[in-house]
Length: 282
Image 1 (cartoon, rainbow, N blue to C red):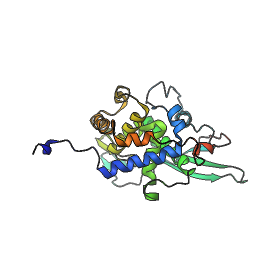
Image 2: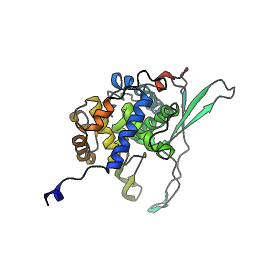
Image 3: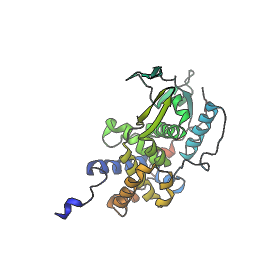
Image 4: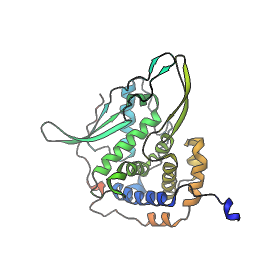
């Protein structure tokens, strides 16, 4: 009867296993050599993002360049553009439009120059994210992870249907797990004119607990102590992170992931760098 009081696993076993398999795929895409030697846990602090620029567009470009650098993709040809602003949901004081169309946080697609000489990625972001730099970083990390995944022939576990979820995992592998987890679910108070209330927003594809579980795996593989992580994690996610930490610590999944070595694999994306650096903001 005492088994009734045992704590349930943070995730369904099938979901936890898929995340481990996605890590295997992501490490293949990113390369275990780069992951072991250069990848860091990127944090929302002045050390990793020290820029203070008055112009919002210039700041977005600077943040994008830093995300590219942490991802090891400085030389990959890509361009950055801002999407059109979403329609306002506030039609009049105390009047909100329910279900108003909202643009995506970001997009990724490959483009070819008019002369056919260059292939580059076009990454866009929603201008509303200029007021939320942490979400903007998560968007850039996700879209750049798309770029990495685009260079790998092997499909993620589950195939195309799970591509966006696996891209979030790949963004965690590149070091942006704090941003992916913190941006997965936000509950905040808002005030606009005479309208006040609470808003709930979900960004990304992994749920908040799935993203937190993936972050815990990253920290276990990199031997990053909890005390370096929790001050930067949403307070509501700290219990989930601690539980994931306990479940992962010394598990067979971590042993399995540590054994992966794709340093010499010819399909490793690290052998396919871009040849030019082209970054623009518009």
